[in-house]
Image (cartoon, rainbow, N blue to C red; front, side, top):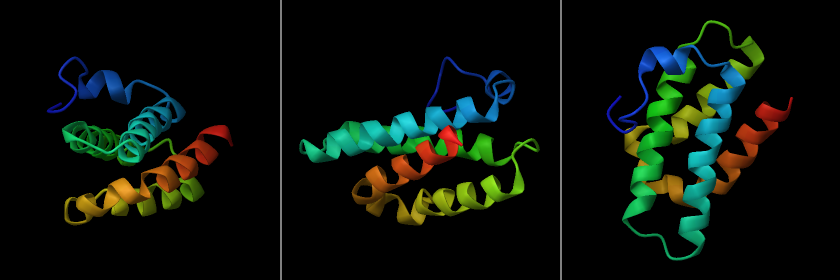
Length: 103
């Protein structure tokens, strides 16, 4: 994994999907907090890590289909072409992921 040097794809895939949702949410929550306090270069790193985690999460066959639809919409917002707009949407994306995590 490029942005998670100490985490392998195999190890990540072995985690429950809700754990992975929480990990993506954590990166987006951090993005939202950093953006509220002025941003900085770490915002980009958080978004790239969220995007990397989401890429693995999306490929899991164990995710319920209704959850997969929600995750695909969130993944769209983290697509490379939209990444520059993601900081302003990070809090909303975080809340949507936490709703999935809590369900």
